[in-house]
Image 1: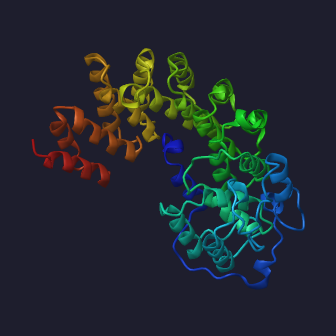
Image 2: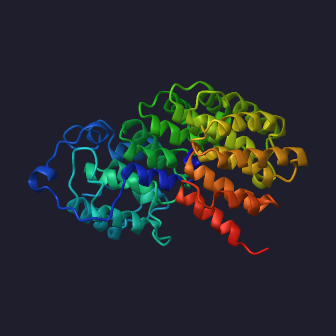
Amino acid sequence: MAHLGRLGRVGLFASLLGVAACNDKPSGDSAASAEPVSASAAAAPSAPTAPSAAAVASAAAPSAAPLPVASEAPSAAPSASPAAAAIDPELLARMKKVASACSWNGKVLNENCKALAGWHEYLFEPINDHQHDLMRLLEDKDPKIVFLAAVGLSSDGITGTSDPALAKVLFDAFEREKEPAMCAGIAMQAASVKTADFGLEERAKALLKDHPTSECRGEFAAAVLGRNPQLYDLIVELAKTDKVPDVRHEAASGLRRIRHDKDREKNNCKVWAELIDDTGEVYEATAGWLIGTSGSRTLSVPCSEQWPLLLSRAQGLASTGKVQEVSWESGICGLLEEDSADGDTKTKAKAVLRKLVEVTGNLEHARVAALHCLRRFDSDAKTFAKTFENDSSEKVQAAAKRILETKP
């Protein structure tokens, strides 16, 4: 669904990998010796294009020790800099075990490998805070370790880094990687770096405009304003004009990260209104969701001037069975949840939701969600739900039944 593009980043990344819990065996020597290509080639010994770990540490943090390499014995010397600390041996052992258990195609490990699923589960445990280790391992000479570090960054909490050496490592890796499964997590972490503090602002702008992998540009655009509000105008430009619809969707969502700036929040509403047109692209539904849900619930300026446009467009789509994104329902339901919406606006919102349910051509999930929203806000929801006890959709039937069984 469109509006979850930024709200569930781990879910998106898991969908990119399509991790399944099934056993996999390495494909023998051929798998272990496969020639890394694309992004992975940058980390392989046979084609080193990235600066060495020691060079990175020297350039960005002259007083720090060289960055450790996973395949070499880590130094145990203590240091105040995360870039110079020893790699956690337990983490490294787990990574090597996964790398040896899953076959490698030269770009990524087998997405159906059970060991890879276990790697994600391990990183989801709150006690396993290995963010800095994973960042440093983006410089490792084993492309499989680099892959595991990159995908791990999408699971390990998005907090960025305040270490200049690691910030540079992130941006070097972001520029280098092209595979969506590898650079999405890197982009998420790079977006949390305060670029102006480390002289990385121009590199950030170049990545937003020119990185060849749209999934990675989108990830970056969706999150970068949280710590880099100075990039606001560029994100607005991407939302309005980027050639890739998914990037426009992510950039539009990213505008919501602007806080405590009412002028920009009001401008966001205007930008989103420009995206509501008849293209049917994902960013249009995203814009509808953002207009409908900005306000008291999100502690932001409500887009009240744009509500009539949202209602009109959603009504037209619902009436013709063209609601194919659940974001439309979320935006309309948001008007019913908004404290500042008047009675007329809420009456029209309920009418749109009813039409969305009635026309079977609309997305099944959106029809179900509309019924649930009506159950919460429409006093006549039970009478309406009775009409759908024998609907062609079993899920709609089930939603109607739940409403009818609800006690007063």
